[in-house]
Image (cartoon, rainbow, N blue to C red; front, side):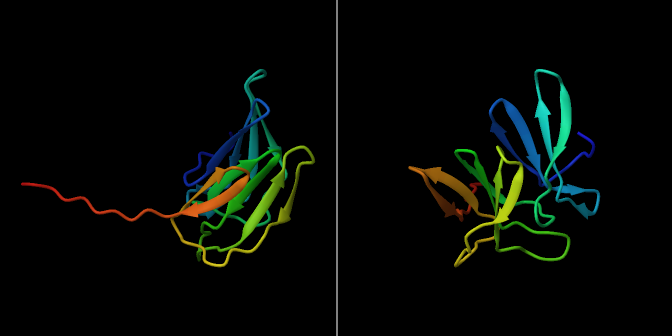
Length: 124
């Protein structure tokens, strides 16, 4: 990988590992890198439409959904969809109520946004 990233997300697709966005130092990235374990090489693929980090991610077939997150200045409430067969991005469906810090999960060919709130009680 060219950049050491934090807040990035990953997906395994057809034997490749994709790393999406994240922060490098103070810079929010929109780059996407693909790792090929058979040749031990990293390759850039099409960048996301916007720089983002700490977003939700889920895969449905050949499509990867990137949801919300944040960039260097604000939270994002939109969706981008990556088609790994065509190596292209498009704007995804809108979200009515994005919850920052939520996770995106797949269940029966649908995507759900879940945010868990918890508190820990400790006995001293």
